[in-house]
Length: 240
Image 1 (cartoon, helix red, strand yellow):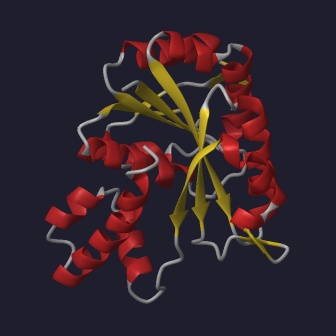
Image 2 (cartoon, one colour; image 1 turned 120 degrees about the vertical axis):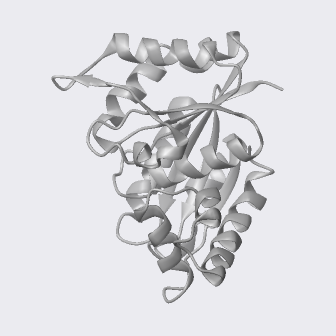
């Protein structure tokens, strides 16, 4: 089986990219498949706040220009790895990193060295929904079929409906479904029980495994976190 480099890309900020990156990394770690993580977000660096994942910061921009040597080093690190890697990216550097990946045909470069490139992107409901849907379409045009595309449907902001149409019924999904490796749904959580427990875990910079062992969470809180994790992990079995 090919090793994989998982890039989390979406031009819209605040849609849950770092959370998705952390979920991918935790799942791969559970499977014994994770080599390392990289955080290329020059503004927030949220991926790095989950200390157990040891995400290495990458200086992507210098004076608002792409740090080409820095990204070259990132690609070298991916090629030199023996297991999967996860790369998180922020909205501020989305365009320069995407341009680098496309113009250097990184999907082909990685494939030549036994690494499959997987692009993960997030679509949401709510006010930013249409922007994320258009971002998905642009990423598919830029990266498929050389890279595989996984879509994370984040419904934490509300149902993923676009002008009354469910995500899987939109023209963008229907016209590009053959280029999409799989879908992962992050369902809206009960605001009184499940959502506060997840928010507490994230605020503490913990992984699911750490929360399960921590005295900061009571039995039922751990049970609810386990159910959240299991729902996502069951979907990832067929995607990753």
